[in-house]
Every structure is written in structure tokens, then in C-alpha cells.
Length: 266
Image (cartoon, rainbow, N blue to C red; front, side):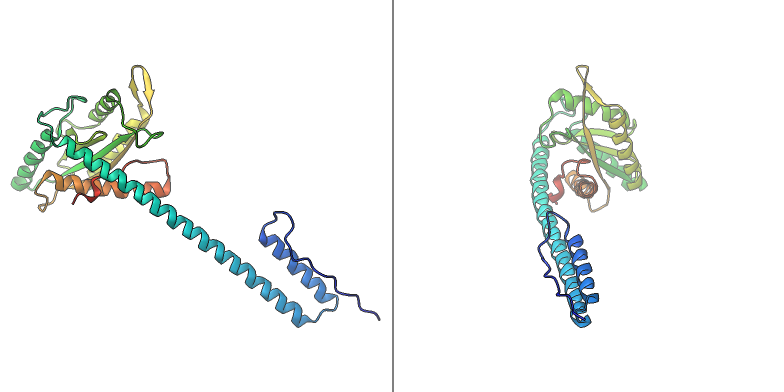
């Protein structure tokens, strides 16, 4: 009986087939060879080697993907840090306001916010009544770093005023940032308010001159603690929370939220 010669196997993948399909085809070819008379030990060793090659390839691809994600994460972190610094500069600018009302929006200014903060601290000391600050930022989703025009900011402030209670204080603390002092509210109450405000922006788009302006709203919150002796302390805490919320939302949905702010203030 004559034995058939083993055919030479071309190990090059054909076209753009995935490596897994190529590996499967090679394994089948080896099995065919084994049944055709090739020593079983050689065929088995070849298959084991093939599996190891496939596993190593997958491990390398996973490592490359992880490195790419880390690279993007570092770039993203740098970008958000730059935005945070920009927001801090905006806050410093608005701290120079002397009027109690912001001239562009008609809501309270940073000076008014300081007055309301002092009132709430006194109430906390007398009655142990909590209060929380919600820090909100408005932006254009298509151009997140662009400055909004004055009429757009004014319309956004008006929309926010519709969501606040009579006892709450809405003040503008940055070019695109607003702080709402929520009297008697804890952390959970602030989260409910932020959700309601965001929902209001989605359901009733801001309109300027009869034209709808797409805007997104981001929010973070901080409840007053006795260690917060100045307005900046509670704003910084709210900014850190906003920064955290933005990063979380970015990981889940890159389009959902904007700038992180005074996170490095304290």
C-alpha cells in the first residue's frame, strides 16, 4: 500500500479573513493530515502550538487596546483640566462684581450669592437646617468650549429660574455657570433639583429671537459643612462633584456633558 504524500500547507492568511478563521482552517488541515497518516504526536503538538499563537495574538491585541484607552484617557484628562482652569478664571472674574444683580441675565450676582450663603450659614447654626449648593453649567453641545452669546445666557438663566423655588437663590458665578442655593435641601434634594432642571432644558428648548438654541445642562452639588467657612469652599466642593459627574457621563456617553471646573480650587 502506498502512502499519499502530505501536501504542503500555505500558512499565509488569505485576503482579510480574521485570524480566528485562518486558525480554524489550519487546525482542520492538520487534522486531515493526521488522519491521512501523519504521526498523531506531531499533529497534536501543531494544534497546541496553534492555540498558543491564537491566545498570544488575542492577548497582544487586548494590550494594545488598553494602551490606546489609557492614551485617550490622559489626553481627555488634560483637556478637562484646561477647561477646569478656564472655569476658575471665569469665577475669579465674576467675584469682582459689585452689583447684587448680574446685568446680563437679571439673576443674582456672586455678591448676592455671598449674602445668601451667609444667611444660610446663620440659619444652620441656629436651627441646624441644612442647605446645598447646586453648581450648573450651560453649554452648546456642538461647540462645548465656545462662549455663549449674552441673549443665550439670559434665556438659559430664565429657564433655570423657572425650576427654582421661591426660597432658593439663583446666581450667576461664571460666564456659563450658575449656582443655586437650595435652602433646607440635602444631597438627595439637590440631585432631584438638578435632574428636574436638566429635564426642563430637554423638554422646553431655549429660544432666542424665535429660534431654538440647543443647550445641555450639567450639574454637581455640595451640602454645607461646618468646615466651609467661605463661599469658595462650597463652590469648590460642588465643582469637584460636577467634575466627577462629567467624567462618569463621559465614560458612559461622550456627548452628554460639559466642562469640569473649579475642581482644583481647594
